[in-house]
Length: 366
Image (cartoon, rainbow, N blue to C red):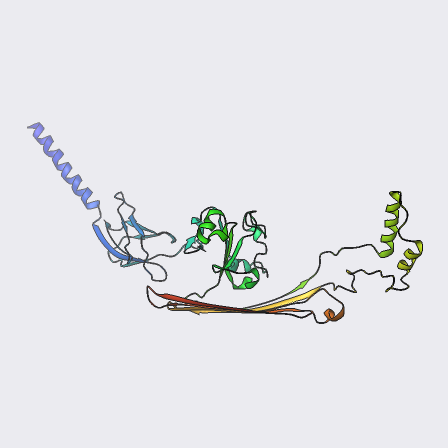
C-alpha cells in the first residue's frame, strides 16, 4: 500500500511538471512574408533562420517569398549576400521584410558582368575615380594610380610591357576621356585578362568605365577649377665664355692645345655683338615665364527612372605655356572642348538598349 501511494505521488508530479513545461512553451506560428531591398525589388536566395534551439531555416524564392514555422516572439535573422543582416521578432502579422545593402560593398565592372570587390580574383584591381576626385582633383586619368594599384607604373601593367587600354570595353587612347567622366578604372593582368579580352590583352588590361545615369537620382553638378603651374627647378648651364675656358683647361689636362683663343673668349664674355658672339640662356626670363595658368569647367546632368536613364558631361579646359618670346608670349594656349552622353532604356524584362556618344575638339594656338 505504501509503494502504491509513492507511485501515485510521482505520477502526479510528472503530470504537473509536464503541464508547467507546456504552459511555458510559446505557441508555434507560421510566417509567410516577402523579402525586398530598399528599391522594393525581391531579394532571391535570402536565408531566414530562427534563433531558438530548433534552428529552422527557409530561403526566399524567385519572388522573394518564404514560409517558416517557429515559436512566437522568437528572433529571426534575414541574411543575403550584399545586404546587411536584419534581426526581427517573429510575428504572424509580418508580410514584408525590407533589408538594406551593405555600404562597404563596391561593384567592379568586368568584361561581361559585375562582381563585388571582395570577390575579385587575384590580378584584378579597381579604383573608384568618382570618389577619388572628391579628395584630390587631377587632370590625367592615370595620374597617381601607382599608389592604388600594385605593380602598375604608368607605362606597364605589373612590369609586363604595354597594356591594352579601353574605354567601356572598346580600345581607345588615354586622351579620349577626362577624369570627370570616369566612374571606375579596372586593372586586369595575366590569364584573367587574356581569357576575357583575347591575345591583345596578353600584357594586361586597363579598362575605364564611364559614368551613367542612376534611376531616381536627378543631379546637376558643376565643377570649376583653376590652377597655377610653377616649375620646381630649371637647369642652369654655363655661359659661352665659361664653357670655352673650362674646355680649354680640360684639353690642357690631356696634353692638348687650346681650342678657343683668348680673343674669342673675351668677345663672347663681353657681349659686344650678341649675334656674332651669342651667349643665350634659353631658360632665362627672356624666354620662359615663371608660371602659367590653367582652367577647366565641367557640367554634368544625370538622372532618370526605372525605364530610362541618362547622363551628359560637357567640359571645357584651357592651359597656357611657359614660353615667353615671339607670338607665344601673348598667344600660346591649348583649348579642349569635350562632350560625352549616354542613355539606357529598359523596354521590358528581356530587352534593353543603350546609346553612347562622345566628341572632342582640341585647338592649339601657337
